[in-house]
Image (cartoon, rainbow, N blue to C red; front, side, top):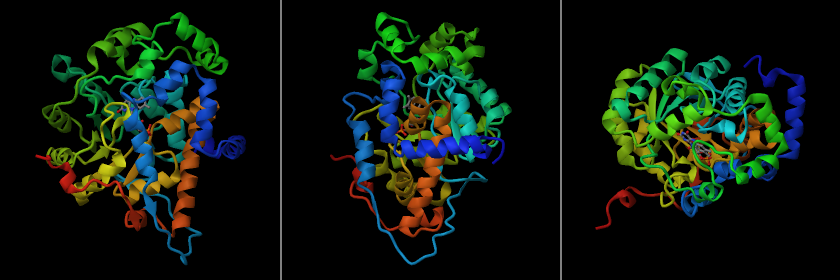
Length: 410
Ligand SMILES: Cc1cc2nc3c(=O)[nH]c(=O)nc-3n(C[C@H](O)[C@H](O)[C@H](O)COP(=O)(O)O)c2cc1C
């Protein structure tokens, strides 16, 4: 660590005060709701369809129980975890959030700086609001890159973006599989949220009621899809949004994943894996692991909760790769639940973004510190001395899918 908020006494004091006043992600939700415009809050919090998938992620995680053991010396628990040769402070990372600057202007920079300061991975997205080259400057040791398919021209743009991320210095490539088509998200439709973003009387009214957010826009400027500027031909909001609308989308076919594997020299994973057979396929193609994720319930509302498919996927991968987990993680207890069910590390999306939306620029650091501290407390409470022990913790998981559940019924 060094040079970040973690070293600044004034910031440490501010963060301690914030942790007292907003101890849980639920507290941040209440504050974020009035601090940012309604269309932005609902874009962040919403899910696909009737949002049953979104709710299922949380309900299923909460159903996982871990039995505590007592009598060990837990004064020196080790929260760290090693992923791809780097020892991180704790098994939590920041998931990619596309168009993050719409929810909190300057979000990408804050995520990157918090990740570097607290030594946790930042999986920055193709559709983040700062370019990968800037992100690596802010977070040289912990930046991973998430790739979306840009299918036209035989994925030439995807290959070029991959090369750019490598030259910039991203450590790990993660290709997102789970957006084969665009999802229907009713909250965005009701709020008139379109791409490119249009100022209508409704969106203008919502923005006018969010003075903190407007002030941040004044300071940081309107958000753009910064990585797309080179491909789109101009860096402005309208041109890059039009490019995203036209070119981003469609799933990655496996042949394309194989091409990316050949191209990317470092560790590579796929994100959005929900079936053990897809994990097997990823390993066959030489990938280094999978991210078990259902996009936080934003894509397919009939999908199972990620925690419920995790154990069988982790068993399939075994010692052949790394298994990461997201969708529904909001606390250190959830981190322990995910790892006890087979993940090497957890990631969170909305929790980090809610930190920024609720608390402004300190919010990402607040969340990083809160996750690490809560994880430490949870290890102590359960008598687990380190992350390896969490993977062998006594756990009861009523909703877990068995191998048979993945077979056809007829
Ligand atoms: C507003 C928003 C935008 C997202 N954009 C992306 C993206 O650009 N790429 C991607 O792979 N996943 C994206 N995701 C999914 C997250 O990376 C992550 O899988 C999900 O948020 C995890 O669930 P959680 O929010 O409950 O932690 C997005 C999620 C949210 C909430």
